[in-house]
Length: 340
Image 1 (tube, rainbow, N blue to C red):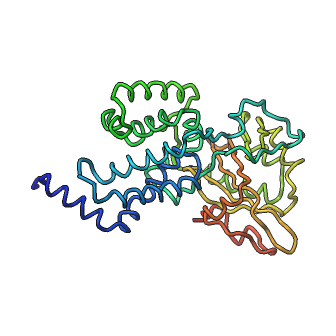
Image 2 (tube, helix red, strand yellow):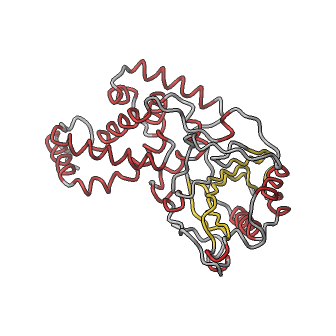
Image 3 (cartoon, rainbow, N blue to C red):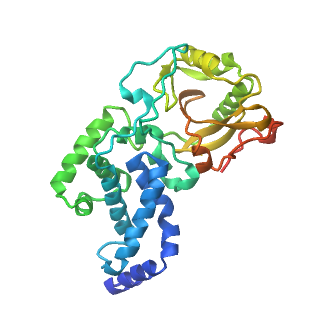
């Protein structure tokens, strides 16, 4: 194989920059995943990616080919994210706020002023990147200062060298190594790493999800409780309340969920490399309208964590319909069908 000369490499990179629409299409999804890890918001990540491409387009004439176009774009995106994060609080989930878990019958308390962590659709990112966007991992990243967050992502997720990271962040290799060490200690204290992921769903887990959807459709609390692990956690931003254990979660759904028998259909999707469902609520003649987006974390053949997001604007991001007809029945979307 003939080796490319430095001139040939630069010419190829220049050609890549000449077709900016193709460049955008080529790197859109992986840059979205990167900006999402940094920001914890799918809405912000989309804006940050657009800002990245705008800055790249304006600076394309000055690109000198000292790195690949891909590396150059990540450098721009990282600095766009760091600027965006200046002075902003981290995006939490309810359990990370330091409050005690609640009992199912306790009054619900909302806080719309908190910038909550959001899920991201699997369809919006590269398949190979889903392992590093698990909600638990992205939530752990939120506990890091912005520059530590950037260092950990660039080193551990993108596998950049310390020297490359130092160059991108305009700092020293020693500072990068120190920041990475501190970031690792923080993330390790939460028992999470980018590699703490699960294999593809087993047949038993597919059956579990089918039973889960059916139990909500029938509002069968007893069955829902049996599908949860003994230490299952339920969170539902923007509500500050969070719950631990099947009985408490079952009581929450029985007492506070407004739906009854055949009032709560679910459509399957996928978020953060995890099974997810758009749950709809019956509203008389209007049919069924979006109610919450649930992202599930499984353990063997049980559900161990449910994060139910009440931000119904997420339904459009996941390609879920804005309503279901009044005569809808689960047979209209066979259980296990994934909505893209």
